[in-house]
Amino acid sequence: MLITLISGVLFYKNLTQIKSPSSGLLKIDFDEVRTLDLQVYSTTLLLRQNLGADVNELKDENTRIKELLDILNDINKNTPELKDSISKIRNHFLLKQKHIEAFQVAVKDLRTNINALMPAYNELERKNIKFVLDKRDFYRECILDSYMFVSFSHKDNETRLTDDQKVLGQIVSYATTPNPELQKFSGYLDTIHKRVKELDTYTKEFKEVTIAPEMKVIAKYYQESLQAQSDQNENLLTFMFAAIGIYLLFMIFILRKS
Image 1 (cartoon, one colour):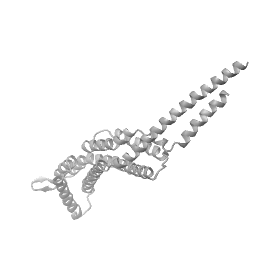
Image 2 (cartoon, rainbow, N blue to C red):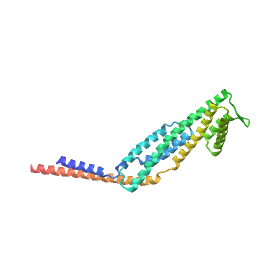
Image 3 (cartoon, one colour):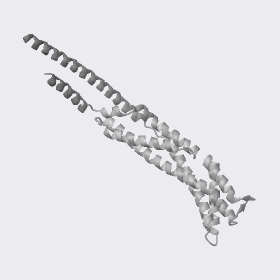
Image 4 (cartoon, rainbow, N blue to C red):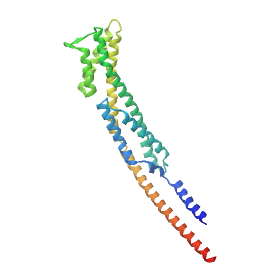
């Protein structure tokens, strides 16, 4: 009798878990999901402003995105509205994950090329390769303009760097023989310009692209899932107490008969 009652209660518990339409939603920390976009933006903004900052925090956020994508894949999308919202959130984080990886590559490459500027300039000095423009050391001015553009990438600084690149291009192309040192120096400036633009683009995107509408839909189903789970737990407790009561009545009946 006891085994039969316990088996019935366990069967009901397993049956309700199988039929739960959105149980996967309960695995998601929605507060974390809501703040994950902001965290990524804050971290990338910090790295953009301070290239020497630690990138491990961004790596951790990227790892959390991978875990979130795995959870999203397991959610039972039982309605078109829920299916569409989860699909958009998943695509949003897939793209964000891709851009985070590209951002990390850009930061690393930008650091490398910035660090290579002064050694390249010193090599030009050592080989007595000089160019004076407006009574100024042109190559040193290129370095200063690059640093200014990296620090503050507004239009005026970009224009100065672009002008330096044009002049450098003319110097390299008009040379009677190829000059590896000048070509390297020019390449560093080109890469710095390119990578700064990429970082600014990614940082702006991390700030502006939002999944707030989709999160509202998910949150609605999340609350429904919590309520459904609460109702199931209440029903399970009711069945358990009923089973205990039936068992006690059965035992009393047996004792009286004996």
